[in-house]
Length: 510
Image 1 (cartoon, rainbow, N blue to C red):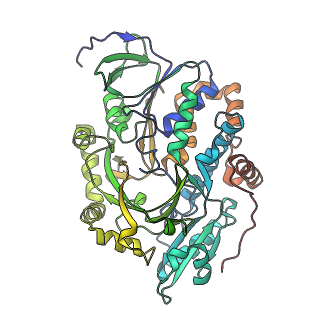
Image 2: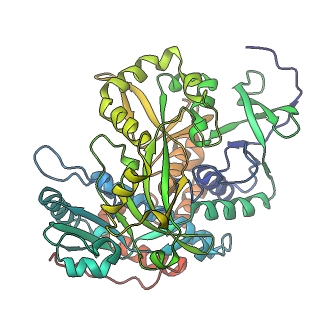
Image 3: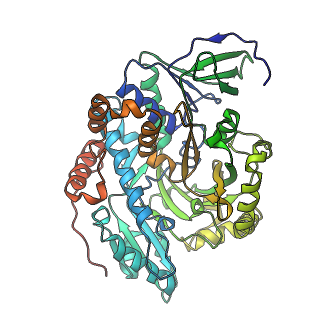
């Protein structure tokens, strides 16, 4: 390694790389658990939540598995696996508990600006898909987290739920939908920025924008980690030391993790997938749709490309998006470099990446088809969900980059993962978050897992245990197996977050 001549500044206890929802969540958790901790946050852009946490890029739906069909795959025997859906629903409940705690403590006092109630719906057509949705509904009803979900194959009922979707649809086409009224829309960009505003006002916390990590390595003399950072505006460099380093840089995390050279990082690779939305520009149409309507992904499509007609509240205005349309770019960040992918390839991950590529040829074919789509092709896809859509009412909006995790696998050589993965050193001194969906919605549960891994002794203390249970009342319990506690906490968080009255009884399918 080249010698570094810049003087090393006495560093904070913790450094967070990236000013997105993950770093914001971890920073707040740590300051609540141990107020005397010193924390520095470094962000390469000039504002917080400017990449994947931004509403126009990726984050938006409060992913609670109410409507996302990719979380409930059909098994070979025809049954529906709902284990992932239950886990995600539990995780989102933890997120809501934490946000409610922050509002009650006046840490956040603008809940209506980041979370609102909006029905979550799944919509399918064709006999095979209708049968699948019926089985999915029946299976989910076995867990109280999904009670209150409604199922219907009645076109008249569906027209009430989602008029744009049903208007002028072929009456002979078999259709079905589920509806969950307690779904939410979350503006993670607004939430992240609000959290950082309060964090940066706390003693011992410093937030640096326009600073990029150029290198990082273990500090043998001082312990922990040293970072070489550059102010991208002034081009001045500095070195900083810290005891604990979290890499929450979205698509940029993989390259920084590789620089750490910890044994746990070897074999990990990344596959970038870009995205685009069709954004409605006709206010009359926007006002006619009040739901998040998710469908089934095309064969070979990555899970985060599940098409949806999506109502969102962004900067106080109701918006309507359709997509995302997948694409391919070698960038790992929307504001990244086309050299990101080639630079990430190393001897330790070359074989897993090649094998994952061989196992995912349908995905490659799908992405090529998506990249070559014409405006008419995109409109045709939209018309499957909104038959009366017209080209002049929609414009193309570029979404953010997502980097899917590739990792070693004993049987396959390498596999492509579509979730999130925390990679941490054995001594707990460094951790990185890789991957994408459901990401932001489950940030709290992901960071709770990170705390157990990286702060194991503190996590066991009575002080931390009590504080964790105060912040997340279901902490340490399996919420899916505790209906009484779960319903009580759902009611409480709904009240605090301003999500309306929480009352439901299970509905019969019709």
